Length: 307
Image 1: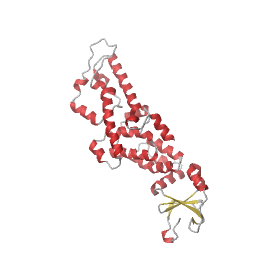
Image 2: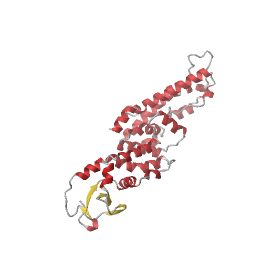
Image 3: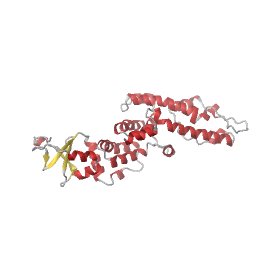
Image 4: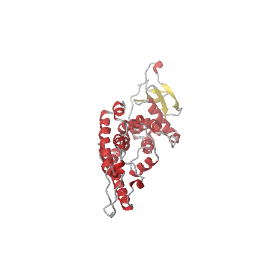
């Protein structure tokens, strides 16, 4: 109900107070006079809300327009109104925007569009996030080749956002990148839950084992091609220092594409064999990445996100 005391009346939104608006939505202490038809077109939740008869009194309308109180965050709701009323709102986001900017731009819209089932806005937000959180190995390779640098304090914000808004498809890559955060920094982080911190720590060990024994095994233990007739023996395992091994252990990256094949100093057949094993290993890591963080399979993720 709108307070009867005039001094306690909500302020009017300077952006979204339309003289022909057919409903007043009050969020926190701000009133938005907007159009039921626009909200109903994009949201079946709002459409149902507006069809439910509301009890009438002298204080449940403003300028003769019905009032509906919402319990949402004001900044989030304002962002959604901008996205609904401004056709090119998402074009404001620069193509080269960093992850912090992306998350700040979409988080409010994603929360509200998920809650009220505004599918067009939700899908736009997910499409934006996909540019930094691949859900296929080919997209992962494109992102890796771009040499984009993630910031620890930003990447961890994506995990609770994905859980809150049911966008599990960004979680495998978010966890994967988070395993490169130093353990002390990760444990002291105030954004991640303790469960997600534990998943990062366990996942880090799993990724390191896969890098050492599958995707980049030739760095640690060279295997000749079965068809090789030469005494090939790469010196890479001997050249792998303890320091470099420790660096890889604390910051594993089994999905990284190895390109310096000439450094193996072996015959073409052995190089081809190592390349094949490397790619097959990367495909295996990608396939099992969700399960490392207790997310099921990629198929399970899509079912959960689309339910």
